[in-house]
Image 1 (cartoon, rainbow over the protein chains, first blue to last red):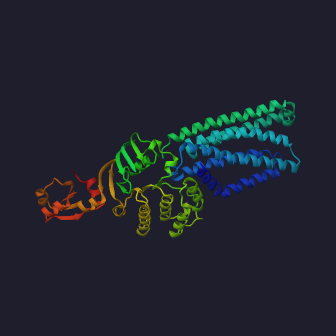
Image 2: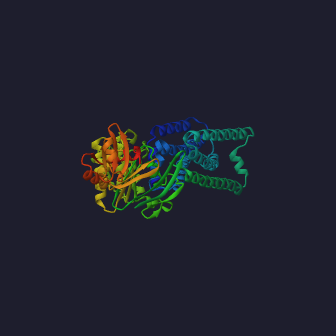
Image 3: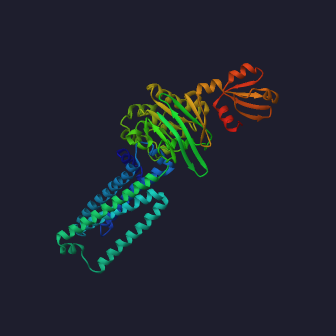
Length: 217
Length: 282
């Protein structure tokens, strides 16, 4: 597992150009976007995409055949992809949240509480995103897996935009809404979202292990 | 060390049916044409494909129970697969260090220098020879007990091949219980390295012989039609019609040398034997 993680970190490290583009887009968002919380979404989801890309790197040029001749199990490989996805996606989420909070404070836009709530809502969505992207990518490979991901991403983006519009149209202030909710209610809702995300992730892991066990190289 | 019993695997019209053994301290060669089943056999041994039936035991353990820790005792070279080309040699050192507790970093680094393999260059930018050397070096740097090498010398020039074979000889000299299963298109490599050789054709093992026996006792007899008609054929393995008469493969060279002094007798080589076993008649 550790060896695979090292491999994936090395693979990502070698994608310097892509990392620079992400950093540049992230910096531009922080500087110019009114709502810096979008940065959290961007970094978290792009981060998890980097992790997913390592599956393509492994598969390229029949690389999996050699990879699975190393002291690596198929279960371990599948589990590592989730751990790595959560490390990179979670890292992006954490960094994005911190950057959004700092940008909000510097530019005096948005409340930290709103940013926190958005970040907490996004994390379970990130779990679901990772849960969908990994098994599809393992099963269908880079090309077909990407089509599925584009469709999934489109649906998620549409849902996000729709939710934002509805919130705006209804003149709902998330902070005010949170204040109105009993503390225990909000906490329970967020906890339930996290638990649901975790359960989906575990189911997805089992599916991915099953996909890997059936694969021949 | 490695025992394959009645391994069967079907891919469309291709069918593998293979039994073979690699004994401790031995270098065993697997030869055959392209598509004969060599790589399929290697992949089955490594658990990369699921056999339809049969058993594989590695170091006394059933392949189905052969886990990640057990795989640390293997060193593998695959002809068409390796570390991602996006990695550098410097990148793979900590990966190997983490995967193999017995990884000898100092040895690995010294060999990199010896073979002129740059540490900071991406593997995809390596020449064929450099990639092949890196693959073999990766396989022998963690004190593996069994090396499984599929075409490790493919695409190499004579000097590079000799260097690789020397590496393998040194690896064997370090521990008398180590073993190697190797396939190669270049029969000269196998003749100088292997203790015994399996020949595979259309998924089936058609010959297994000690290399010494193959080189000493096997011969290609060249007979004109009259000689062929008079010849005792009980020790002929295969024969094939030629423009001059018949070429015949025997594993009793001495018999024909003594009894048919007028026959043209060529020393047995792996190439001769493969050609006759595949193209000759029974």
